Length: 103
Image (cartoon, rainbow, N blue to C red; front, side, top):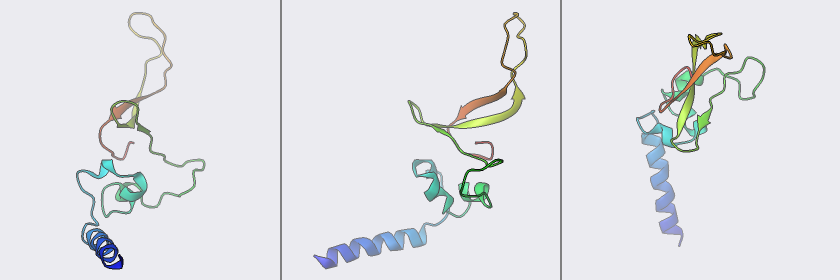
């Protein structure tokens, strides 16, 4: 009845009161939850607006197959490869299994 539900909710309250810092398994949780933790993703996105607008930083996660975070690089693809093939000359993006400032 009410006592087991109260104990159950009290344990969650205690759990989240004690475990408020980022840890190694944060990637299993939503970005919103991760942002609420001290350190980790919360320190990366601190000060970012909650509404996407021009100049916003967004985090994209690939979920088909192996879950990973799209990671942007300063490097561009070449205009033309050594074998003569053309290229987009766009920014390189790869997939990382962890979040960092470039995701």
